Image (tube, rainbow, N blue to C red; front, side, top):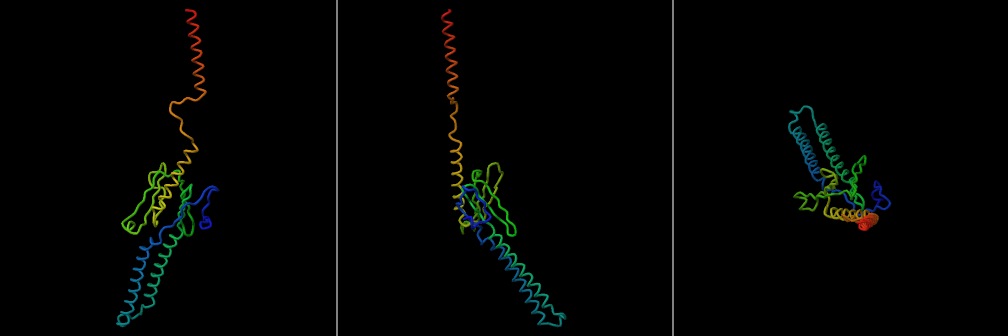
Length: 216
């Protein structure tokens, strides 16, 4: 599993239980906007060159090359925008181990954020209308002492699978913590040394009482 995630550095006893990425469909909005701008740019270039051909006297200087050059730049910039959005998705990884949650982002440089499962206090599953229709959403993770979400695992297909896996690891971490700490001492219980000291004091008091009775 680590061969697929060379950026991931795990402890010797740490094992991966779940991996995921944002869904590629998250760039649909960006792609649709880029397509509209590209079509408008090309349509504008066609319109201008058509008007020049119909009435060349009105356009003494043919703007054909300039218009198509501008249109080509607009199309190229929109293609680059979509490609960058795709790379951001492709270079985002989510990994859940039996110890931590890892989030890796970045195209030209990498940023890795991690949160220990033993610190997780709450998980929130968020879905909008289309998320309910197509079963995708975001799981926000809050940790002890935080005022809000510390980490968001965003735009997951089948987010319930990640949430359930995380909750299982949180329960396992709680059980490990309880086992290491041992059972909590019973309120009011006395240890052997204290009991022996009390018994010795009681014997001494009894001896004093007996001597007082003899002298009475």
